[in-house]
Length: 190
Image 1: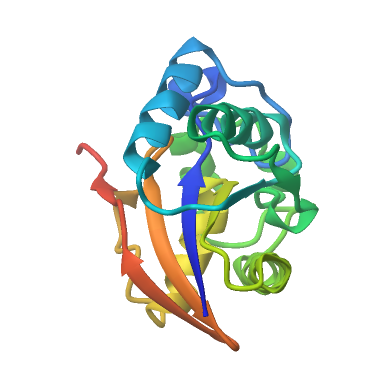
Image 2: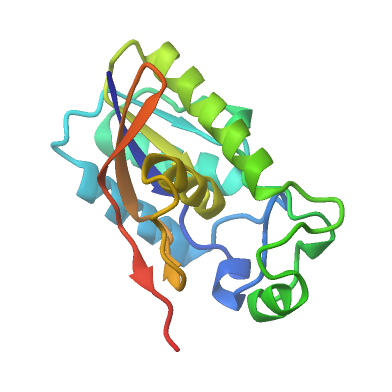
């Protein structure tokens, strides 16, 4: 069994503008770097022995900041933890994206099912590599949403719930079973 703390990367300018990022490699902004420090404090004294990250720069930099604060080795990179491919929807403002595509498929993008399959396989890779060491995993909102759905059989996240930048959600993975320990979800303002 492996304990995994999933951390959403810190804020980027596109997060602040509420744009769909997907695989577009937008860097952290100063707020995002400060959020990574707050995430490190949240994780301090949690017994974490290693840290891994998505290959996208915003996740990698967040992981590097956390690793430095917690005196962990540099993060190992797992490309399978990359954010969902939103195809032609990347760069679109969130309300426009939802009006255009809803929860459906986006031309040139990954489906929700494809995302879930990919990220669960990547998480199993992380756990196999960890050999039961408690591990911090810095990834993306879509990745964490997909894992929440797997762990709760689709009960979480509920409509309107968000995974904030630099929030921490904790899972346990044993064999092929993913269990939710704690979720950091907020509700979108109306």
